[in-house]
Image (cartoon, rainbow, N blue to C red; front, side, top):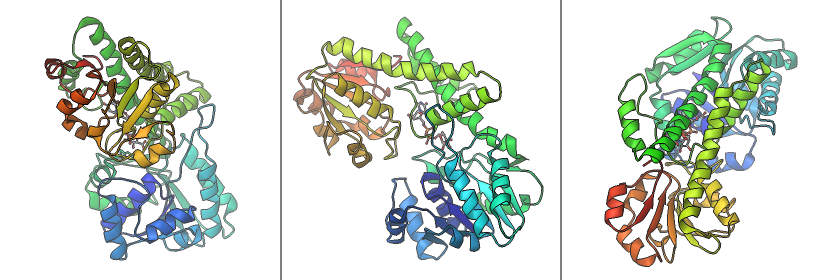
Length: 429
Ligand code: UGA
């Protein structure tokens, strides 16, 4: 199929590349000329495992190309995917101006029937507005179907998630575009759910909110564990073996962050409010998430007493493992809070150092994770990078003033740490 993707961010670039990988002809469009130049020159604007190789391969084999011209993308394709940002507004609702702008650009470039698919996370009923906008701005009066196809990929596992999805959701207002969209996704051999467009849009917000709720639930359980001497990981294993619950997204820690959960949760609460429902359950999910960070900071302050001029080594800056993304990162939030208290920070992340430098000016960035501990009064694990488990703890103990480790992601074995002389504090254990 001939496909164009408008918006070459995390979702758009992965979508376009993974479509090309299964044989579709793809044009990726972005208004950021610098980004398009970089991609044309063989560079890649984000770190995502496996993505660079696939971009190189599919570009070289002629199935993937990049442009700043929406018109070029629209003319070259039968199906146009919208994958532009939907950032939050100050009141928590969604800024849909990029979506509106793209709908207008598509409309003015259309000369024949097109299928326009929304992949961006949007409030329910956005598809309807996109259809109205295209009709309004399309001079040629050609026909068009608007489809909702929410994306469920996780950063850090985006290629894997896209190539092997749990399900593909297709929301439509008529039967006409269904066959073509099914054809696009046929190579992935995933279950396909065809539904009405409003339900498809709601599926995305309902899914992300449920996952956030699951994390806040286990974080609340971690509080009860700490108050009783139980171990939250044992509890998560025990409840997670019930197939109705499942073990995934039951890792207690510093709380969830990133460019999706915090934003989507606020948006869904706002959408519900506008529809006349006060979604108190989700407001509680937000509250638990914010409190999780406060409790962890209190643990650090209770142990170190005065934070002013304490030298603290922070391992992890990305909002989670396997990514260089620091947007809404709990790790960055933690660093800012420690700096505000006057602490002196030495920080490291396997992939997010460059992006973190822009938002964390007062910290010392250390290239080698084993050098972070030099002269530190305490270490903090803030992101669940698996490589931190390989930290040379013997060396760290020797170069620190005190062997104190605050593990915000429960990476280490508490008993082992204590056996080796560490003052070790984690979450819910
Ligand atoms: C999330 C969803 O998982 C994707 O399905 C969705 O497509 C995406 O949002 C989106 O809407 O675009 P993502 O934000 O990339 O994906 O990251 P997750 O892996 O879901 O992690 C989110 C946050 O939750 C991270 O800060 C992570 O550390 C935290 N988390 C995750 C926990 O604290 N505990 C867990 O058990 C799992």
